[in-house]
Image 1 (tube, rainbow, N blue to C red):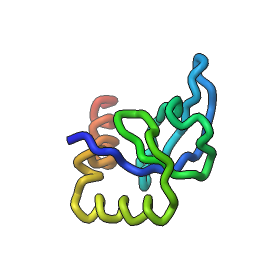
Image 2: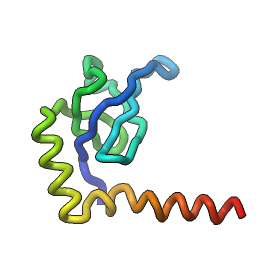
Image 3: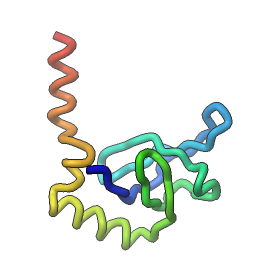
Length: 94
């Protein structure tokens, strides 16, 4: 499944002429393109789908949505288990 998930912008930079952000999705951090929301600022929230910030969101709505997704197990389904992923990387190094 591919969800649109709310996340908080923690860093913004230009990469090869494209405005990009580092976005925190309740502990999972991903790179996100800001071309559809060029005026988004650090600390603001946005709904992100397939790596693109699509809509600005207030903090309370983002928090409630992330909590609901977590209760339903949708965040793990969308992002996977970070501990399992880290263990897999560690096994590859052995």
